[in-house]
Amino acid sequence: MTARAVVLAAALAVSLAPGKARAHELERTAPLALGRNLGLGAAVTIVTLAVPAPRACSWCEPPAFDRALHAPWAADARRTAAMGSHFLSYVAIPSGALAVTALPPALRGNARHVYENAAILLECLLFETALTTAVKKVVARRRPAFHYGRAGDTEYGASPEQENVSFFSGDTAAAFALSSGAATLSFLRGYAIAPYVTAAGAVLSIGTGVLRVGADVHWPSDVLVGAAVGASIGIAVPFLLHPRTEPGIGRAVGTGHILPWIGAGGAGLAYVGAI
Image (cartoon, rainbow, N blue to C red; front, side, top):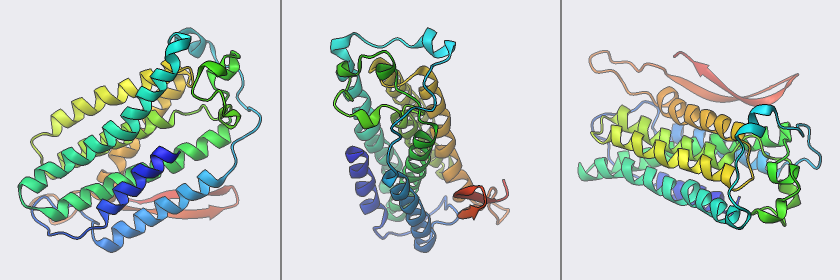
């Protein structure tokens, strides 16, 4: 989680800088609103990361679907696949998402949109990290390399605490959350590069998922669910928490809030608003 913490810290530093507003405004981008979302996301992320990893698996046997489609790379290439996936999810995609959402407003002299976009991308990453970490520890699914007794060939050979946190893929979810968030922001802001951002993000994110399976640390279903969850967060956060005001209408569509809740069945985050 160290690499992800670095990404979160860097994005937070950029997101808190001041700026000036122009056209294509999004709702709920005032410093107080952004700070509330970032603080809530950070708090829940810290709590989920602090919970110990499960020592025993609750989901130990893979279904036939995963057995049939799981195809790891050769033993001597699995660590290389893992490094490649981490480079995409922790370096290439975050830096690319920040760049493509910063360049158009920067060229227009709109510094405030640069910082707002960075803050919204950080929201996507925080909410994704919190949800992914919580699900991993609740589901307690055994990773494929541990299931087949070949963990020594993978990046987690010396990390037994990683054995039962396979579902779902955090790298894949982070990749899709950031790439989808950048694409959604690009469309909401009216950037001409939006289709290219979508295409490039999809290719890099899919590549991340493929490499996680190749690294023998995730089942195909881990990657598919991670992709679906990440993409959903990347779309929902900008669109539902920061929708663009429709021209001539004077109101935003899809306005809502993320709020914490505590009940008899547990605790978590809830979306309150209209779509």
